[in-house]
Image (cartoon, rainbow, N blue to C red; front, side, top):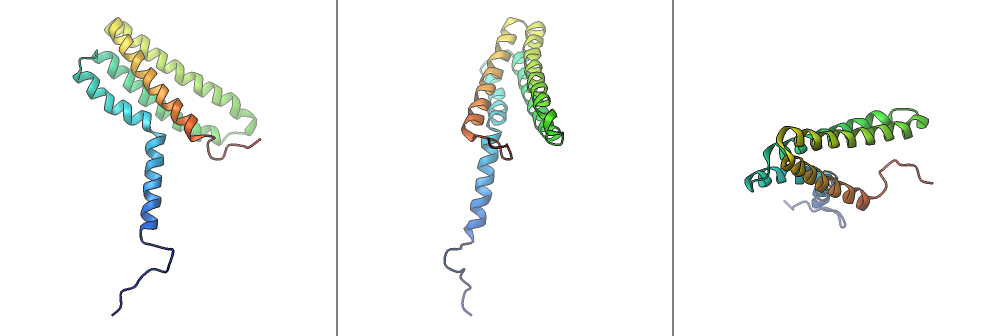
Length: 143
């Protein structure tokens, strides 16, 4: 019996390439979350204030979940309402992060507030960079 060989130009690795591409896209999309999850144990091991690190990490993860849920909810609304809803969504998540910094500072002290601010600043910077690199979201109107 002869072994079955795929026709020229196709390979069994083509499907694997698509899977790797989707995984790498997901990693890039959630790079800020990955870095926050990895930074928490490292920061705590290096002696960073626990309250600040944990409160800010929790707030960052919560705002990312809210962002994803908000995007899906807003996408189902009328076109004329989307701008306002996106504005409220964005500012609401910023206020959540600012509140986490204040809570960390009040509960744990100034060092905890600073640790919370630094972690959120770093995560936000990574998220912003990934957003700029990835370009216009899929399905966004072209003008």
